[in-house]
Length: 358
Ligand code: SAM
Ligand code: SF4
Image (tube, rainbow, N blue to C red; front, top):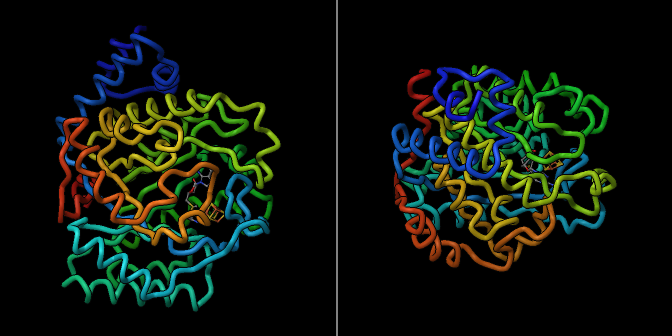
C-alpha cells in the first residue's frame, strides 16, 4: 500500500506506522503535508508558550543517557532558590506567556517536594491565579502529586522514554529506582489524580528500531495522553550510553525521524498538545519551527536565569545557553511568524484532548 492510501485509513496498524516513519523524499512530503492539514483543522495555527524553568540539575537517578545523572561527577550542580524561580515566573507572567514548565532532576526529599509546593502556591498568588503550571520533576509518590495538584499544578510531563520494557531496561540501570512497571503505574496515577498528562520518548537511541518507535506511538494512543514531548536523543560523552555512539544513526536522520514521529502522532491524535522540543533546535537552528509547521503547537522558551543554563546539560551543544530570558523573548514572535503561526499570548492553551476526555 502507498503512503496516500495509508493516510486515508481511519486508524494505523503497526506496519502502517513503520511505513510512514520510513517515508523519504516525496513520500515524506506527503506525510508532512497531511499532518500539517490535520493540525490546522484541529488545533489551528496558534502556538502556546510554556516558559521553561530548569530548576535544578541535582538528581537522585542515574539514567544512562542523561548528562546530569547522579554519577556524573563532572556536572556543576545548582538549584535555583524559591526567589529565583518566582522571579522567572513573574517574568513569564509579565510577558504574557500564559504558562510555565518547571523541570528538575528527580528528588523525593521533603525539602524538595515542599519547595515545589511553596513555589506553586506563591506563583498563583503572584499572578492572580492566572499562570498555568506544568511540572516535570520525575517520579514522585501519589501523595506528593496530589499535594502539588491541589496547590495548583495542572499538567505533568513524564516521558515513558521507551514503551518497550526491554529497551527501557537497556537505557536505565537495572534497579528498583529505574523500574519500567513503576514508570507505567506513575503515569496512570497522574491521570487518576486529574493532571493533563504528557509523555514522550527520545528518538534515535542506541538499540532502538523503527518498530520500537511505532509501538511508542501506539502506546501513546492507547494510554490516551493529553500532551507529548519527543526529541532526538543526543549523546553526552560523560554518560554510559556514549559507548554506543558509533551505532547511532546520524544526527540529521534522528532529526528527520523525530519530525516524522510528530507528524504521525498528530494524525493519530489530532487534538493533543505536542511540544517542539529544545533538542530539535540543537540539531537544526530552525528545528522547532519545522516541528511547528508539521504538527507541534507548544513552544517552551527557556526562562532559566542565563548563568545556570550551561549546567543543565542533558546533552552536548544545547542551544541558547549563553542567553537570558529577554533574548529568547525577542526572537519568539519572529520565529513563529516565519512559519505562518501566531503566539497565543496570555492563554493556557490547554490540551483539547483533555477537555474532551473529561
Ligand atoms: N528528571 C525529570 C525526568 O526525567 O522526567 C525531568 C527532567 S529530564 C532531564 C527531561 C527529559 O530529558 C527526559 O525525560 C529525557 O527524555 C530527556 N533527556 C535526557 N537526556 C537526554 C539526551 N541525552 N538526549 C535527549 N534528551 C535527553
Ligand atoms: Fe535525572 Fe531526569 Fe536525567 Fe534521569 S533523565 S538522570 S531522572 S534528570
